[in-house]
Length: 176
Image (cartoon, rainbow, N blue to C red; front, side, top):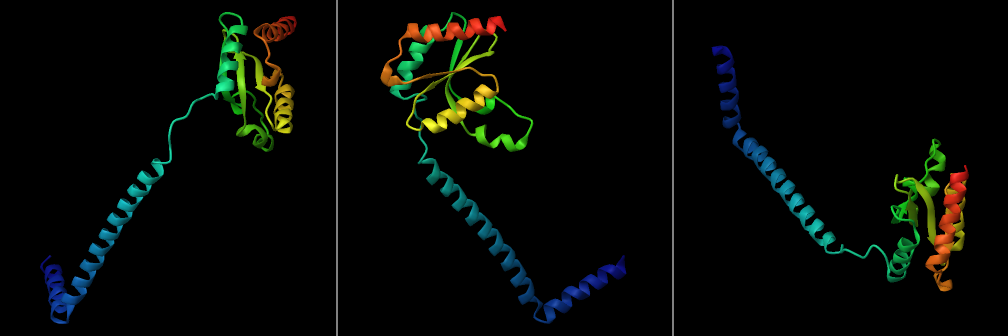
């Protein structure tokens, strides 16, 4: 052990004697400088998060037209049934082929009507400006066996009309 201590001591003495102080001070300076840079990056990152968070704010789940229709739709469904707004298509249909997921992964539907057991009764879509996109979604849903009801708010569909449409779907499902 004494031999090891002597060798280490002689190394330190040699470094100190041959401008080793400068080498050690340089190493310590680099380590401290690196630490200061890491602290600076962490501080900037926190500030960036604070700046970004100023751009987020809550919004309403439904716009006024959708909200009015939502309440009309709720009145039109049988007791014990549920209406869910803005549901992801990913929650409604699935595929075992990865290539077919992309077309529906990020899309959503306006409303989903479910029975008491939370089985999908139908999807209710409100006509928008992009009818082509709506038709693509409708085709995917229908291919998966999901009924789609489509209403244009300009036509002001009545609760009775909506109820008749949903009753028709329920009768069709009961036959199957």
